[in-house]
Length: 225
Ligand code: AMP
Image (cartoon, rainbow, N blue to C red; front, side, top):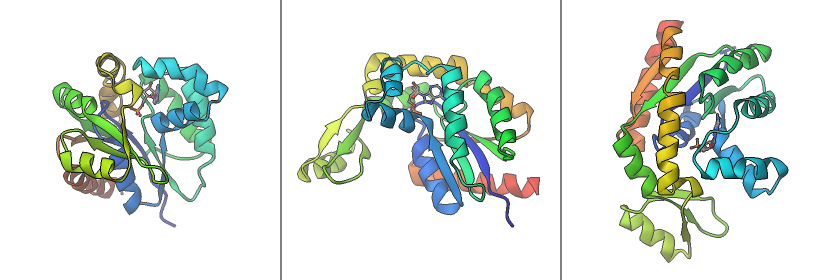
């Protein structure tokens, strides 16, 4: 049996983690755990947990490591053993990476690779400040950029509304980038030392970044075999 792949995907806000996670899922038998999306769903559901994390997230700060690790243990346990796991947005600190080692070995899932999406702060600010959710009743949310006039017009023409994520407000963007640079970027060295790091230039269209990522992952996995 081919062993399921276990991957970590990280990068600054706006680098396209979730978009690339979706594209990777088309090519691999893998389930993604997007920690940011799961937290937003919890807030939308109005649960106690949602109320606990809402303010922290809106300010662009990271949710507490202990809480995140508890949640991840639960989410990880729900993925069937014959499927791989793609962690989109976890770990975000070295403490979380240390905790992840224990969580993965508890469920007998060796980490195959950590993929880092690389993007300049300038491009990240441009992407995040123009990012909107196109919300059309009865349809899944779509992410668009306000510079893409055709996408804006199509959304409005279908009766959609353009919604800004609370943490895409200017102050939160600055805070999220500062949090990334101070707390998440050290993971480059952490995974680099373990020889499982794949660096990907994320300054391109989703399709070009995805092609680069797939080729780099294939090459990396071939070397490991
Ligand atoms: P994202 O959708 O990945 O941009 O995440 C949105 C927000 O969710 C982050 O700015 C954090 O507030 C929170 N979050 C997501 N994943 C984590 C994590 N692993 N550790 C701490 N906070 C997280």
